[in-house]
Length: 576
Ligand code: C2E
Ligand code: CA
Ligand code: CA
Image 1 (cartoon, helix red, strand yellow):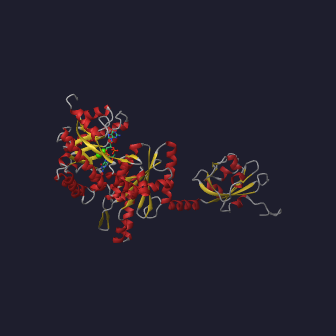
Image 2 (cartoon, helix red, strand yellow):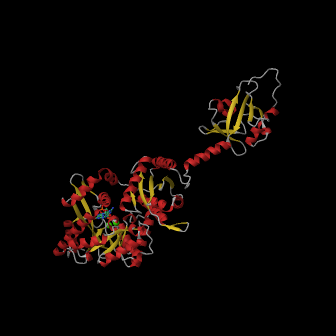
Image 3 (cartoon, rainbow, N blue to C red):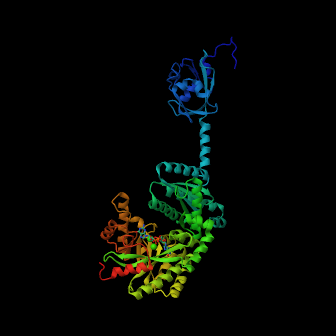
């Protein structure tokens, strides 16, 4: 704008006509004029502003990139807007709520009339933008985080974990058979189901974890925890079990009662992968692996899933040939009666010596065998070997007829409709006396479908078999029904035994161990503690009234011959 030199000077009052805030600052930094709109934005009177030094103004500007600006910069108006983009919004602080403003500047500090600064309130626009931003962050149907946003949450958690050494768990939750619900009852019911499931996940995760919706019926949960190793896995497993239970509660909608289940998979950062996308991909592979076992299952990602995906057929072929090539072997870990200190039984643990890769631990090949179905062949091999070994030991006088061998039964096997009849056939063909066996099944089987598990357990009891719940205490099962099941043994998961050095974690584990021991006593079943490695743990178990234990303190799992020698030594007259 050009001034005609003979034009009347613009009075300060006339600035009040402008809706924009205007302030005029002289070269020495004093505020020459400010209009009502400007003072209104600050929540200050004209007297509070005009005549004061702009080097100590009652207002401040904050830039989103540079933080609170120095008052000297504020007064040197050029610094405010001159060197920044005119479109940049600044947050202006006065005595009322800060306002988002756009600042434009006219003139130079050296000019006698001073510098004029026009300040436009953009707060409403800004909050609309913020809303939009939030809308991008949250899924319109469920209000959970969107995929993009939960990835950001995960990236932030991973970045924090890198500094603190914490671990980050990513759980993927996929509803089983959601499409069937949508097809049968229509998308309105489908949407209601998704909203309900989202609410349950959100409520369950509360401050434990962040939840996002990443597909039609797929959710992602991000959890950070400072626990390490086994404790971290237990935390994630508990979270997964809690989420599964939350989902299996019936959903009521419009007179319908719907029963849902979900398949869950988890990956741990940085162990399984260090980037957000790689971790999510790992959790996704874990979900697919759990789907292969059946509905309502949970699996951690493990490297064998990758082997399974890349090299699955090869591994499976190797596994099937392993029995024929005698690469599979059964080792026996003694289970000791604590009051006598003598072995009362043994757990059969399978071993695989791969001709190229050397020994492969069961934790690596059992999950593969479960998905490909070769687990049944492994079980048959284990049962056949146990029958042969028992017969040989009995004839050598190493074992007595009351000595039992525990064999592990995978969930994938136990869940098959023909499990009991197949098992009966195997008992028959191997000539195994069922009273010499105890079957170890995991607690999660009771959580998933209690009715089916109970029926099967009764059928097994009818065959003369005993059953043990393995890894007890990790599965979050409800205890109320335990007395109705034909169980004989509770095996206390070895994660509870810890070091028992009296630190907080150990105290908690100690309390859990004691609770399981007294629970077993009340149920009239045997408590077996797993993973006993030191005398601390042993005396704790003795004091707590635990009946049996196994662990490296007594013996690791031994091949059949060394096991026989171990037994002989225990029962020879010179043994204590
Ligand atoms: P599990 O049934 O919980 O078996 C106990 C595991 O703890 C065994 O690992 C055993 O070697 C280990 N262990 C024993 N004492 C100690 C100890 O004092 N400290 C520690 N840290 N560990 C101890 P393993 O042999 O590697 O077996 C791992 C899992 O593989 C088993 O866990 C079981 O779930 C599965 N498995 C093993 N053999 C078979 C089988 O024949 N069939 C099926 N379905 N699963 C099997
Ligand atoms: Ca076991
Ligand atoms: Ca166990």
